[in-house]
Image (cartoon, rainbow, N blue to C red):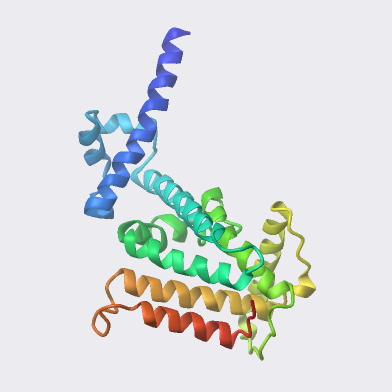
Length: 247
């Protein structure tokens, strides 16, 4: 019994330290520096010993993605809390701005979660509702709780939207996933108040947000702008106008 308890305590003590070491390597040196050998050297243990906690480097990186998504969700939630609950549109815009600030302050963590094809979201379908990773769902639901009222409570005057026919079936599937996810949050959403056209606009908005933030976080806008924040703000203003959103 004593031996079993000691082993359990050792695992409890070591596993968080593995992730702390992995994240430090990620932040200081980038994703490619996060290896089991480097972590073992940092912790003063053997590399094979790490297989007690993670089956592979990819398993560790996936868990690191979970930690990062959880931290990001907390940061967005804190930023949103400073805005009055009735200011729905401003809360959504605040989340967008907080997402950009976080990405610029944490470029290697942003890259791991949002721009790495072999680990993180891509291996599980996406960072969105319906994934197999609760922390990724939690990050997505922060945005959904903010954005859905804009589309379901009469704040959106839906503009003409030409949804490609090839996307209709998958949009219908994703709408059901969103409705189920929101039901788990205690929020009832009817299909008739969330048309596929509105969902199409939501995804279009995410691609614009993600695209701008990724380009800026990776320094790909510096060829033209020393500070891309005005470009970002102009994009938000344009989306609000194009989508017919009101506060």
